Image (tube, rainbow, N blue to C red; front, top):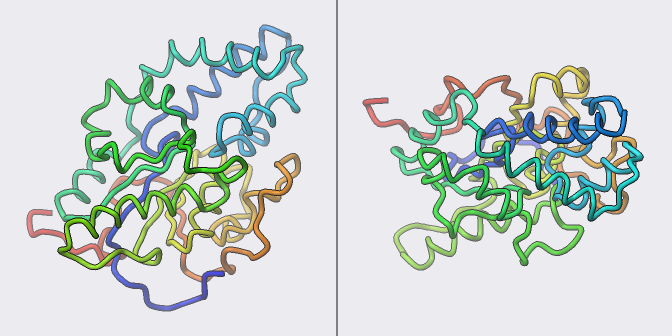
Length: 279
């Protein structure tokens, strides 16, 4: 469990989720699922279900969706239909407000960065090939994706594994270069939009910035403190069983998590990130 503390070490590494955090693909996922739902006379996907799906690896998200939608499709049939729609729409993805400035500023100030996304490699390619100005900040060795074989089945978000792998990718390069000390989890700042992702970051022993979709924030109103402590990600009705670890990742108001409604004008100094004079 992360202890409550007043002071923190300066942030040396920022670890990023992708969908709904860096780029607007959460809305694109919803659009694809709604096409399928409407084909079978089902209502559009509500945010109370969307919140359960967000952040999880594809197979787990699909099972939650299937259990709710009750479509006459097998798992593989649904996956095939989703993939066909996603191939068409994902190349229209765009960075969310403040992202390009945030990444550029972190890079210019020598902050290590890595990507930790539940998206698989095929979808990652569809979403990012047209956005080199965003994803060139993440070298291939620092892109940890949902189908990475090092992530064992059942250990996707909200488990901490993907963020610990992202940190290890950075530390591996630091060890090879031999110019600085390795980075500890409490020197990392996780950027997330999903509740499950916040829990994963907290379980990894890292500080977390939660920047949720406005609709997610509406339906979780009053739960903000529990979410920032990492206490709710796998506890919502309908979530998968057996994914939660024995120990809670944090405490209410322990200072390890913070809510931002936008990443425009991010307060770097608050996290001990020293800016060059030109910034």
